[in-house]
Amino acid sequence: MNTLPKLTGAKRVLVIGGGAAGLLAAGRAAELGAQVILLERMEAPGKKLLITGKGRCNITNTAPLKEFLAAFGPNGRFLYGAFHRFFRDQLLDFFRRRGVETESERGGRVFPVSHNAADVVNALVSHAREHGAEIRPNSRVRSIDRDSRGIRGVKLESGEFIPAEAVILAAGGASYPATGSAGDGFSLAEKAGHRINPLYPALVPLVIKEIGFAVACQGVALKNIRLTAFACEKASIPDITIEHDYGRGTGWEKPPPKVIESRFGEMLFTHFGIGGPITLLMSQAVARALDAGPVSVHIDLKPALSKKELDARLQREFAAYPRRQLPAILRELLPEKMVEVVAGISGIPLGRTAANFTAGDRRDLVKLLKGLAFEVRSTLPLGAAMVTAGGVELAEIDPKTMASKLVPGLYLAGEVLDLDADTGGFNLQAAFSTGWVAGEAAAKTASVDHA
Ligand SMILES: Cc1cc2nc3c(=O)[nH]c(=O)nc-3n(C[C@H](O)[C@H](O)[C@H](O)COP(=O)(O)OP(=O)(O)OC[C@H]3O[C@@H](n4cnc5c(N)ncnc54)[C@H](O)[C@@H]3O)c2cc1C
Image 1 (cartoon, rainbow, N blue to C red):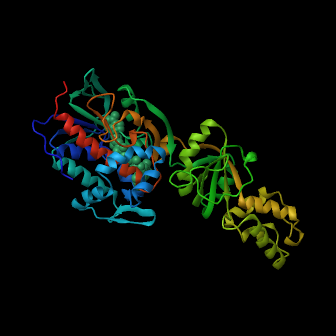
Image 2 (spheres, helix red, strand yellow; image 1 turned 90 degrees about the vertical axis):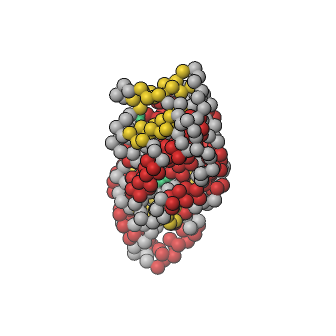
Image 3 (tube, rainbow, N blue to C red; image 1 turned 45 degrees about the vertical axis):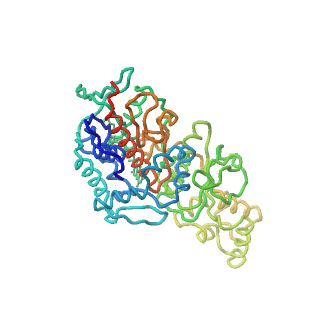
């Protein structure tokens, strides 16, 4: 996408952060003729990129634009402008031209054919260097300097001042701080005058109060179940059967009372609680709800059957095997590791045979299987989350250029913005697209002397 003319009399663009957004911004600004220096606090750029998609880097998704934007919730609207300029086709073309072929998998996830995130980082770094951008590792930015007319430059932790006509802040979020994204972006933006919306962990496992249960079932993956989060204590969970997914990107906007989100799919017990794909998807909404009050989750272990159908199935099995005791009955319905612990919380005597089950026992068992409930203590902390929700208020950013509306010459891109999406490659596409347009716009700004 080389449609913009090269600049003459190039001025300097500084990029803070060598992640997905910063590397592409630096390359694009340099391509357009700006003198670019990318400042990266770690010893090398792209540390987080290297661990994305379990080292395979899920760079984007094949979902149609409407679904793509829905994966970000209401803030997704902000991305129209950037996606209009640089979206999936342009991104895939960018990588293809640099020898990174891609393929799509289940759920529309797009990965490099090599399954190697290092290929993505190398392509981004070589694009930036090819066009003359300088990448300076071990260069942590401490402050962005501005005066009443706008950007003056940045100050490094070492005390060095680097003057510039434009600065692109692409320092990422506050999750996985060992990769370098430790929240500096938020404090730098705040000091520059921007509002930072509250930060929450997103795509993160949940800690439950029933630790004994979690430990006993650690490692059990449950497939084809429905997980629902409620804004109440366990004892107040309403007696309802949920048949649709609720939550962002699901198309069902208004959940029933007390329901935060509900999703069908796969989850996992861990030694502290629950994780796995559908838990991660609802974790951001749960994190926000926990701020307001108690949160519980329940698992419908048999979502394909109504309570009545499940009761009928039990009755058939009880008639066929009248001497079976509770653990043997549960063994037909649950993974082995869950049998003892579920039997323990059922309230039904372990030695009771099927022939001696009362209608009340059956009702209790159906209730348990259709709504195995836990109280959520917390999410894992922000540092352990895959993505940081919250961040720089989008109303203060021009969605077409990523320019700060408050500080002339400042641009912001990537996870530092108040944007986060579901898993599936959406977050990286947002970082790449906002980085690209920020690079273009900053290069243009840098050609105009605003001093
Ligand atoms: C384990 C894991 C797996 C993930 N997998 C995927 C996936 O497969 N697909 C997907 O779409 N998303 C994935 N994500 C999310 C995705 O990685 C991020 O949304 C994306 O990297 C954000 O890009 P960014 O450029 O804004 O920030 P980052 O990639 O975090 O880059 C920010 C950079 O800024 C640097 N920096 C920070 N402060 C300073 C400073 N003061 N001075 C100089 N440099 C600074 C950091 O060192 C870092 O290199 C994953 C995240 C994690 C943690």
